[in-house]
Length: 371
Image (tube, rainbow, N blue to C red; front, top):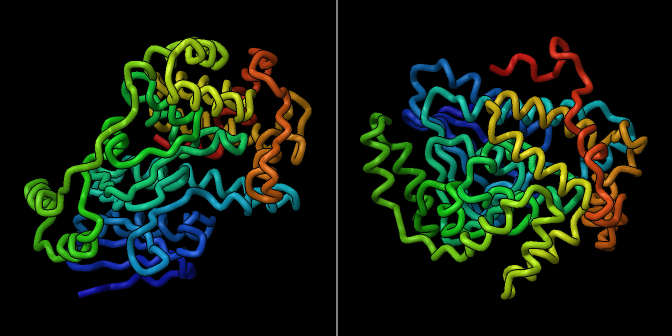
């Protein structure tokens, strides 16, 4: 029996099938990029199911262009960010507050939450999947935290979960915006198992058919669909050696001493992205290593306010690196962002420190209620 929740957002399908509540992101034309109505619909469903005794687990997937699966979620709606900032729309603030609250809800959800991370899983897509009890990838998974590419930082809890990847690999993923497949996702501890992509529909239906969803039944269900993941390709020893340096400039200098194409490509990426936001990102992840998820998300909420209104540097709206990155990579697509400063060598500690000063007193913080 299927029970579909009423929703004012057609881009999220929320239904109960047997003992499993199912969420399908239904915005295939935009690779299921998250809008504010989608975030609200997901949160509303999860809150409704949290205390529903008929719901024993939750599963989430994305709709591809040819049907279910094939794409999970490409992140947040970046064009909306740009348009909302230019028109002074307060919904931009709501978007980040509610998205981060949703990320926290998923990480602390009291029932098994199972993410089918097939196809594109980037940015905001990581935010709604990394808190899952079971994170399923496939041989066609393309995973990334690409925020530094547009002059932002890896938010949605990225400073928390990337800090917990082995051997500085989370810092590499954040700073370079590189895309990894299933094998490297497993090696970086950002996924738990690899399923056969051709059998995802069967696995989805079988999950909903389980008469009871407990640890034993989930384990048996999982084993029926596991397939060997593609081999991991990252040179983790080299990565760890270079990315343990105290700042991005010295990471680049260490990489420049390494032979091979991987090191050269990594240097190119680090020299291409916003120098300021590279160093802010490194600081975020290293602070996040010692923080609770709630505190790290509160820090991110502070940071994202500074990204769109960099008051301590007297830069606002289009003058910020974040808006310039979105303009160059998404709006005008000239791929010629004019970063300020333009070189890693010119980033100062004072420029970075301002991103970590909260614009709000603790009692008025928009995420003060996260526990």
